[in-house]
Amino acid sequence: MPKTPAGTLYRGREGMWSWVAHRITGVVIFFFLLVHVLDTSLVRVSPEAYDAVIAAYKNPIMGLGELGLVGAIVFHAFNGLRVILIDFWKKGPKYQRQLLWSVIGLWFVTMVAFSIRHLSVVFGG
Amino acid sequence: MSTETVEREPASKIELAPGIGGGGEIPTFDITLKVRRYNPEVSDDAYWDEWKLTMYGTDRVLDALHKVKWEHDGTVTFRRSCAHGVCGSDAMRINGRNRLACKTLLKDLDTSKPILVEPIKGLPVEKDLIVDMEPFFQSFREVMPFLVNRGHEPTKERLQSSEERERFDDTTKCILCAACTSSCPVFWTDGQYFGPAAIVNAHRFIFDSRDDAGDMRLEILNDKEGVWRCRTTFNCTEACPRGIQVTKAISEVKQAILSRKI
Image 1 (cartoon, each protein chain N blue to C red):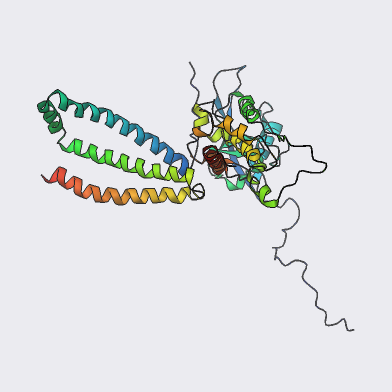
Image 2 (spheres, each protein chain N blue to C red):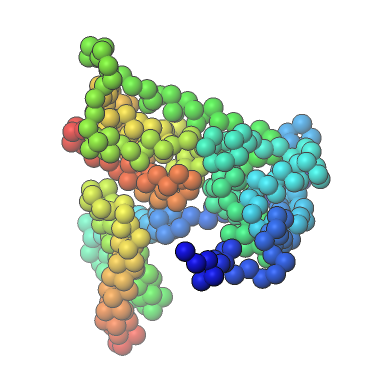
């Protein structure tokens, strides 16, 4: 069967890519919550099983995974506030681009602070 | 009165190099035009067709398409009517973004790379750059894009202050080219969504002080597939060839639904 060559990707700007990132981080957070509900509910099955599962998380790979998770949550949270401002603040649509740069700035500051603390715990002990 | 002291004014304030200034002195350049072709009578698969053209600095993408159709390949199919950015027939995806071919100058694009022209996304392609606009116009009709007034027929005109007129001025500019609706990621995946253009045209009447059916239109757009599908990606605002602040208009309709205040 002959294959149709792909069309170009729509070249959206800041608004579209922030929405894509919002979707991806949202799905990532959803899958974390799924696992999180499962492992936390283990405590009702047996506290020992819960401790064993949580202990299994204490390795550098999971540590980096936690860093990624916090990165996703921080972006999703700040960008969520931006979306609320776009919908409810009169000047939101006009300043959506500047709002996105603020989101990225806040994300960066938060992540630098968190990384220093978190990575020193993960790799320090 | 002496005439000896009168100095002759130069013919033009702009200095032109000798030999320039006549007609046809517009710089030319070479472009590669790639058009996404599709003909269901021949094959179910789309393909890219390519032409090398020498174009002028004043030419638009539409002129390049005309040159191809008139001089190289008469089977290339696209819509255009006025060719001057008023009728809204020639919306297409140029280098990955929705534009009117008649308002996009070739010199503003990167001519060192091929210029890619594709049909707009989200509507069924019929042939080459022509899409079926029916789903788009269906949504447009559903928002009742006409004046509804239940008062007495006025003897003269229906009066309106300039502030009241200003309220919906931006959304009167729409030419229904579908550049906004077909730039919307929500519309690509969910054809049921009303789309930006229909909401813009609803906005034009919802905020018109002479119109009495605002509540009815808000009820129509308060649907699952109405304004709440908008994810504020701003693709529509960026794509609109008339510069309408589309996402802002959608936000205003959202707020009007919540507050029921027009």
